[in-house]
Image 1: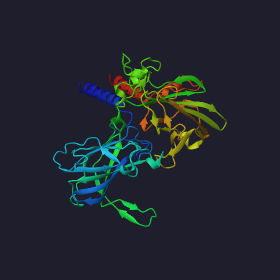
Image 2 (image 1 turned 90 degrees about the vertical axis):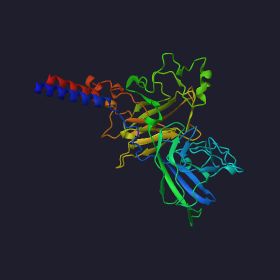
Image 3 (image 1 turned 180 degrees about the vertical axis):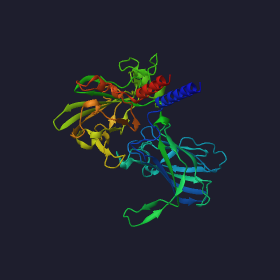
Image 4 (image 1 turned 60 degrees about the horizontal axis):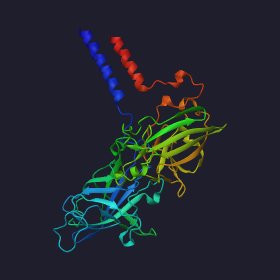
Length: 449
C-alpha cells in the first residue's frame, strides 16, 4: 500500500508539473527583451524660487527604442505631498481646476490634490509655449524622430517650500497614453540638471532636480493583442492567416465589428466610441486592428526578397509615425530596402544583429490611413544569403517576432507555416513543447500504473 501510495503521489506530481508548464504564460509582458532598458523618464527641474514656492520645467524623455506615444497623447498625474497649488502653466494645462474658493483675488490655475496634466495643441499662441511643448501629447522615439522625442511644460507651484530642504517631491506619479500601460516609480532627487549656453562656454544649473522613471507593460495596456501576422511564400500556395480570434472574437450578433460594405458603416464610425478612441474594426476571423503580412517573394542565386504589407482594419484610427520591429537571423545582411526607413537594433549586444526597426518615409507613407482602400503600406526587402545559415526549410524564412508600434503581434503556430513542397510529414508537423510534456506525463503515469 505504501509503495502504491508513493506511486500515485509521484504520478500526481508529474501531472501537476505538466499542467503548470502547459498553463504558464509564453511571454513576460512586463519585460521586453528587445528593449530591456526602455523607459520614459520625467525630469522635474526647479529653475527659480518664488515668494511661496517655485517655478519648474518638467520634461518627459522617451528612451524607448520603438514605442512612442501617439494621439490623443499623454496624460501626466501625481499627488501633492502637502497643500500645493498650481498658480500658472506654460505649454500644458490641467484637465480640471478643482475647488479654489478659498483664494481671494488671484485664482490658481489648479487647486486639486491630484492634478492631471495634458499637452497643448499645435498652433497655441507663442506666449503660451516653451520649447518641446504643444504637440498634442505626441512623443516620438529617438530612433524615428529625435527632435520630437521629448515633451516639456513650465509650472509655477505655490504653497510649497522655498528651499531645497522644505520642498517636498510629489507622490504617486501616473502616465496614461491616454489608457493604462505605464507604471511609474517614486520621484528620486538627483544631481541638478546643467544647461549649456548656445556657444557651449557657460553652464547654469537647476536649483533642484528629481527624476521619475515609467516603464511599459503590454499586459497592463490592453486585455487583448492589437496586431497579428500572416504568412505566405512563392514556393507554397498556402496563405497562413492570422490565428483565429488573435485579438478577440466576434460577438454572435456582430456588434463589436462592421463590414466594409455595410450601409451603416459611417453611422457606426460616428457612434459614441468615436470620442473615446474605442477601436471599430472590420469583421475578420482575427479581429485585429492591424495585420502584418510577410511574403517570401523571390529567390535569387545570392539574394532573396521579402514583401511586407501592413493593413489597418480600424475604421476610427489612422496611425501617424507608425513603426514596425521584426526579428530574423538574416537581418544582418539587408542589402536594399524600398519605401521604408530602416535601423538595426542590437538588444543583445555581442555583435548579434537580428532585429530591425522599420518606419515610413516622411510625407510619403509615414501615415497609415484608416481601414479601407488606402489603409495599407508596403515595402520590399532584398537580403543577401549567408551560405552557412540560409534555407527555406522548416519556416526559416519567416520572422521570429513582430511588433507594431511597440506591441507584440500574434504569430501563427510554427507547424502551420508554409513548408517546402518536398517536406516530409514528420518535418511538416514538429512536436511542440506542450505536446511533448503531455506525452512524457502520460508515459510516467502508465509506468507507475
